[in-house]
Image 1 (cartoon, rainbow, N blue to C red):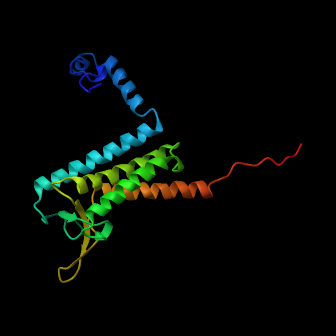
Image 2: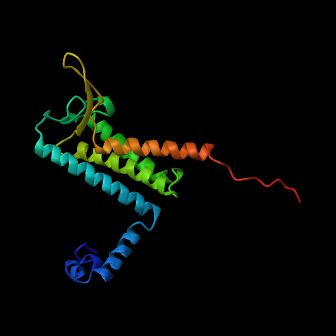
Image 3: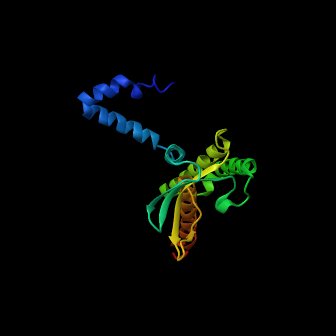
Length: 206
């Protein structure tokens, strides 16, 4: 069924909901509840949100900054840049775009098949996987688009040193942030599972 044909997404309902908001508020709350009903759906919604924000911000960079241009936001600390990366994090494996795209696809398949080992029964585990999936796909889109074939990085934190030189953290993007946050959450979940309180065992006392 197409989006336009779906009864809950009919444009006439949107117009009528402005006149009678209460029944339709309940109606669309049910739609939202349905979207988040299962762990896999929650992971997918989180991933889609990250992909949308990542690609929107990259599109804004492409439309507002020329190649290798910079815009200072906080002097001596933070600026927007338009840099490209054909490698992995910290520009490792530069000019290996095709290889890294293959690695990303393999990682996505492996994560999908092994997702039940990442505490997907918990909300935190679902958020973690959603962030990782969304981040990987966001950068993969950059690598596969014919107009790019490289990842766009635009967030750059640095410190201005004496003499005018800069010492900064490698530029990154929303997808990178999502992956790092998701991996950190996985480590936290694993640590809590290993060091958290264990259920009391039966002593066998009658």
